[in-house]
Image (tube, rainbow over all chains, first blue to last red):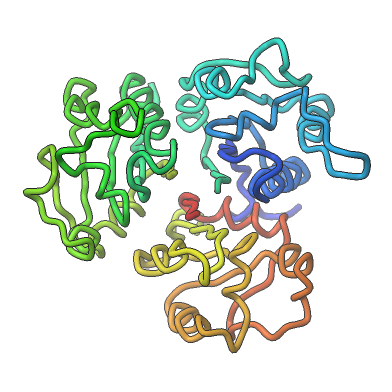
Length: 129
Length: 120
Length: 106
């Protein structure tokens, strides 16, 4: 039997993604961080997409063959791990990301979902540009 | 209900990007959840609060007017870093609202004391 | 121990292109640590014009750099500022869990 020590206490993470998938690496790092949380003893309670981050949920994005497809990677994360992916409705409408072109696994809701995620999680980790 | 201290950090000036306006929206929502909301203005973020802005001249809505209504949203903690102001040739009299000036070292302590820090 | 560590600051901009790292380093509280990611990893290299500044910070604060971002840029074998620790994404998660909060500079 192993004694528990504080460094191993499971932590609830929420992630805020502020940047889209094509202009900057921030969304890639957010995805890699999310995957690492899921492989760890910690928990991932929600990923919230704000600012240009809402573009991560745009089903109409069509990167060329061989190019990475972050939209699909996020959807896969939701499908395989049940991660809650929430797109800010105000930021999404502004940028043309809405129910009609929402990728699988994402849902659209209000900014209260970000505040709630931060309230309930132990850590909010932001990825931006 | 969980009560947390949220700090929203403004490091960019107004109108050059959409970030400060959307960050302010997030701060107002946090306040509506009755969280303890703090706003900090540092680096170019201090330019958000300068008087006499005319964003209409570049076709922008004046979102900075909302800074004048923060108390209506129960946001009472507005911090401006003194060093950032003076490095930009500004002082308290150039600002559109009353703020609490804070030294850089005190700001660092304030940031460390928060539960959630969101910047843009 | 989990509550004894201060904020973990992430910086994702090159110090040669942005003031993000400068802004971060000038506002570190006791117990705060710095993790360089994305274009921020350039600051981890030894012998750059920024190396002395980072080394000075390293005397009082833990410094980390994200290994995959170094390697992606062909910098995995370069010498780094003394005392900086190379971590992977799992290490990033562990650090974020151990520190009191995570603050992003960009």
